[in-house]
Structures are given as C-alpha cells and as structure tokens.
Image (cartoon, rainbow, N blue to C red; front, side, top):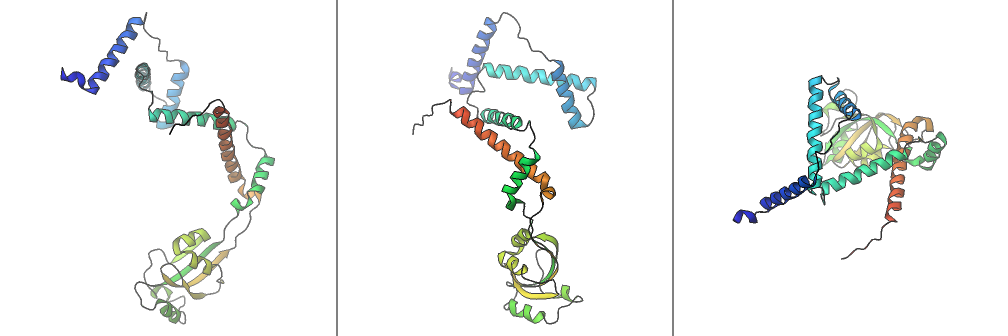
Length: 266
C-alpha cells in the first residue's frame, strides 16, 4: 500500500473521486455548444496565419481541437486546477488590463488634445544633431604615443591616403547621418562633445575617444532642432494613446482598490 503515499497517486484518486461525485450528481450530459461566432473566429484566425480560408477537413480539425480544449478546460476548473496558478493569475490580470486599455481608446484624441500634449512634451520630440563623418584611428592599445602619432599624421592626411593611415577600427571608418546619441554610444561622450565643435572643413584633430585618438573629417552636420507638430504628429498621437492607456489603468485600479480593505501581515 506504499503507492497510496505517492502525491501523484493521491492527486489522481482525489480527482477521480471528485469526477465521480460530479458525474453522479449530473442528470445528463453537459452542453458544449460551438456556435457560428466560434466557427467564424476559427476561420479568421486560420486565414490570418495561413493566408487562405480552411478547407472543410481543416475546419473540422479546428472544431475538434476547440471541443477538446473546452472539455479539458472545464474539467480542469471542476478539479480546481486553476486555483493559485501563477500563470493563470497573471494572464487574467493582463486580459483585464487590455480590456481597460481598449475602452480608453474607443474615442481617438482630438487634434487639440494632441497639440496640447505635443507642446507640454516638446523636449521629447526635439530632433538631435546628426553627423556624416570619416575618421582615422590611432589606438591607445597598439601605440605608445597615439596622440603624437595622430598629430604628426594630421600634417599630411588627404583624400588619397587617409584610408592607409592609422590602425584598424572595430567599427566602420565612415558614418552617414548618425545621431549624436549614436556617436556617444560608439565613441564615448568626449568624442561626441568634440565632434559638435568641429567645422565642416577638411581633416581636423586629434580628437580623443574611449579607444584612442582620431583625425576627423566632418562631411555634413544637421543641427539639433525642435520640429513642428505636423512633422511628428503620428508619434505624438501614439505617445498620447500610450499615456491614455496608462492613465485609464491607473484610474481603474484605484477604483477597484477602494473596494478592498488591505491587511498585510509580516
């Protein structure tokens, strides 16, 4: 009788007992209806995934799979398998959050609301400076005097020989229309700050980076600027929708929380 002490065996016996009692109480088979809306949903999902409607055989398979899943879900609920399940709890909370967000966006924002949001958050939409430049790299690891070597090379670097000077660099030697943030990420803040001060006027430097020193030729610079509303309208509307969703969730949660008295025992 040792097998009775096995938790899995005990669980199965309890489940069987519950199922037996439920079956004894039932006066007849439980109705499971697959309606036109269910079938339409299955067909739509198949169409989205496969790019074509399902055949009769495929639709029968979808219906059978739906019936099987529904039966298993119902029986699992009867056994209480959904109680205290972390995944199910999180999914239910997520679905309620999505429902609240959908309700918040039933009415699209007006132009006046979008413009007000844009003006309030103008700095968020400021367009950063952008650069197109080339560089010759002098490595601090490979050289004992990288700054001096770069200074000496600056006297004879030109369009015919610049690719033959310096050391190999882990990234490319020419950058086109990159943002100030990208420059800072790739080369470090010191290089980015120096690049902002260079003129569009031939080779200059040496300019220090996180890796060593560089001779730099700035080919084009676009200054940072504040765009007009129409330039960034789509992004503004998307950002405002995100804020409306977050606000709706916060309000809904607070209304729900007010219905509960919270006690925390530590």
